[in-house]
Length: 522
Image (cartoon, rainbow, N blue to C red; front, side):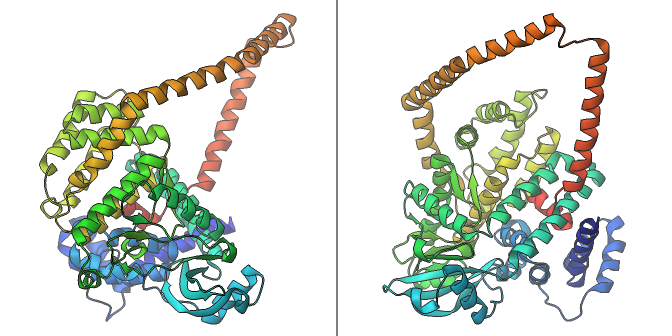
């Protein structure tokens, strides 16, 4: 009960903080609000601070910084989508990419020595001030005792406790959204936040991030010009991660990229293809690809850092994803629709032909268009309306994939406003389709089917024995299926359902007002 009250308090604080910075109903958009909201919006602005930034994006960024790392992640996604929220708004949010205040150097050294079990000098010749501070950790440049220049990432003190509190509030917020907003049920807010919460919790153990970096490095080998820094396992622990140092230019520094003579168009193509290649070829992908986590070197290679949030999709999901993308690339909307139905994304009661027509309405206006010719906010709104029309529920296993697609395409647009995502994606998707649906893929499917058949055959004797034992018990009267037994069983099931739904209510998950906006984005 106390935790629930505390979570309600945190949700209330989030709403107040957004109002305090005039970020919940910004004054710049007053004329766009429906009449029913204008009065309420004016009321919230009574609590706003005077003299805050003129840019509503910067005001939102400041509010999110105050609220903490979970909310900062939300702002980082929006910062990549100038085409959705507007160039000025996104520019204001850009401070969230890599400009968080650092924590004290002495605290960093103490944490490092405690985690590595020895004095700083035992591991490093030099250990500099923080060069980058993000919402969960900060990074220092250092030189090891054997002369290697490295990046040392150290978690913020108390971050686990703060994240846990935010996640509890998000879960409560999701329960409220799901209960009070009927339209939100289709978006599965509870499952959505649980997926994001789990990914965030994993961020607080840097040993897991080290493993993720190693895993992504293997996936990156399939992509051209995509690199991942090597992990220094000897100098990594639960709260410390040490990797090779990358001399690169962050993708937030467009001017720096231009001065270095790096081809921005090629870099945008590399980004799109790197994400898709990793996801399709291995099922593993970097799931936090905002511009602050991506660097370009002078050879035009793209480097990724910060592996706290990794996405994974299974073989079947990868196949459906490729078929859907291929359908759009080839304008085969019937094929893309069939893939949606085969994957279970659209309920079978709907017509495939009607859904194919809806996909055509999305695909045709944007096919072959440059990024600057496509009003992405309108496309996203249309997609959202289609998911509503065809009763499509949010798929928790695809949340991180969808989020990363939005992020990576947004960063590619920042690099090249005319970036053609379809042209960039085509070689990756077509190569994967040729292999998976060609002779090699058919042979692999056959081998997999034979293995499943073999496993089923191995289980068959045990299943027969179980059925034989059940039949013997029925004949002996040991097990009875009379009316009284069935009624008693049904009663237990009803009781189980009651407790299960009560449990769902207590454990429910979401991001409140910020989460509702995020749902609209995905």
